[in-house]
Length: 377
Image 1 (tube, helix red, strand yellow):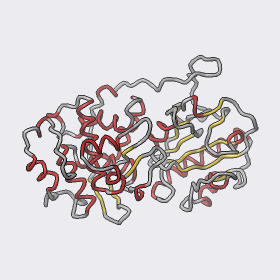
Image 2: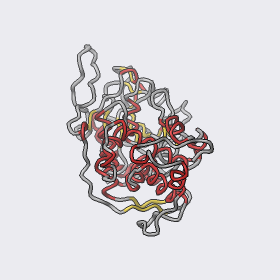
Image 3: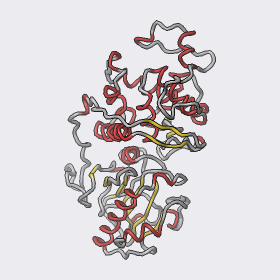
Image 4: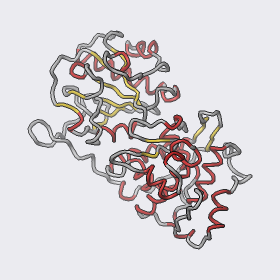
């Protein structure tokens, strides 16, 4: 607990005095804890935060793994302004970092750079979302009941993207986590079958359709049949093209799949790509039509199609076989559809586009393997 800060009183913990609350925050993990819950600092932080805020520990780990693969990236922000293993966001639209500071008393710097503070902050925010979404305190020992809070953590404004996010977290929870932090500490959770209680997210509507050139709602499906269609905000791309399409540009998002799609729907972002590919299973979402100009690679936007990949340049674990195969199938389709040669002159990384300072897809992207798959290997 940050010096001089009193714990916020919460329902069943309201009768705890400051000494008791502090003891909970500092308690060591149980000796009977599941494999991977001790004694390292990250495992300890998850256990303490879960106990203090009443969040199921394995759910907290699954959420963090889905956000960052448990890598805090040395306090550097994601594309969406998210920090630490819990991806606490400080941006014009979202302020979970600031909310975590208010709830826990930790400073912004602590939340950005200290893993334990960041995990505690994420748990505090998640608990506050349980309060706001009406998750009954009597049900909070059941992992299934936390679904609405998890969905809000992923996307506070868009119900469909909230479900999109929460379904990913609960899939990770079911599969279990076997990971290592950037410092080499193993973090393990057993897979568990949970039937999430989606509440208001059970029958969520699709995202509000963007308007087309005529001003009418754009209700068309994706250009690439296997993809989802979740349109970017109209302020983040330009309708039409000023040049013929002759290349595909490969990007790495420096963030998550759901977070990237959400970012492209944010009118403040002023960026977009045509497609986004998920790491775990290769799912594809189209956010800008092939015939429109996404804003993703300065100088090459009018002539290119952009594919964003979930993950971080410095972490090869995001580049799964499922991602490579799905992305290569997409690129192969785009080359066939638009007459783009299947070679490295026309299928390039963001870093290879003149006038751009980005480094993606980075040294861990396996170009030989990717091009072999593009050619049907």
